[in-house]
Image 1 (cartoon, rainbow, N blue to C red):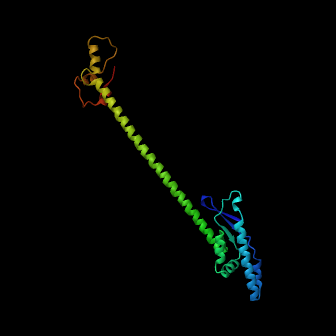
Image 2 (tube, rainbow, N blue to C red):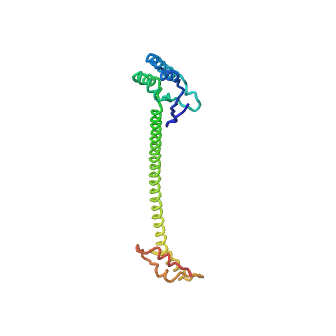
Image 3 (cartoon, one colour):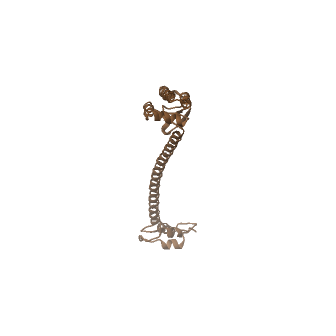
Length: 223
């Protein structure tokens, strides 16, 4: 009559087709002997329904996984209590052996609350797993970012080194390019443009490690 969906694809099924004819007769009986007879019939009726439920193949219902237990709902609280009490709990144990749980109005509500709690715990578990997964992915991504940043730093350092070497060849050290090209002009080469005097004066025949490559480059101004 009702299907409770549980985590991991499991299901609980509630069946409420309980015959209460014998219990109704028990309540209406006046004599103790009659009451005992109808109470016995009521217990046997409950037992019969337990057996029938245990033989039903609920797994054949589309979309329903084999249930761990089937809840047999007794809608009238005294009917449930009288059957359980008269057998000193043996009827309840008999049902459990067949994967049937006898529930009444109050016990069903408590059971449903338990199911709700199971759902909450499952959702929290999934959230914790997802948080751990995303945290791990974020950490790995951050490590990759640091590696990339170090790579950029190395590339910048290498580029700066190449740049400094090129400037040294241009304007510092023995026979640097500025001095060489300026000598060509001094020897009488016909040119239309001239290197700036400041750049020519800054060019040294001696290697100087303290030369600021950027300031030298700024001085290059071909007129």
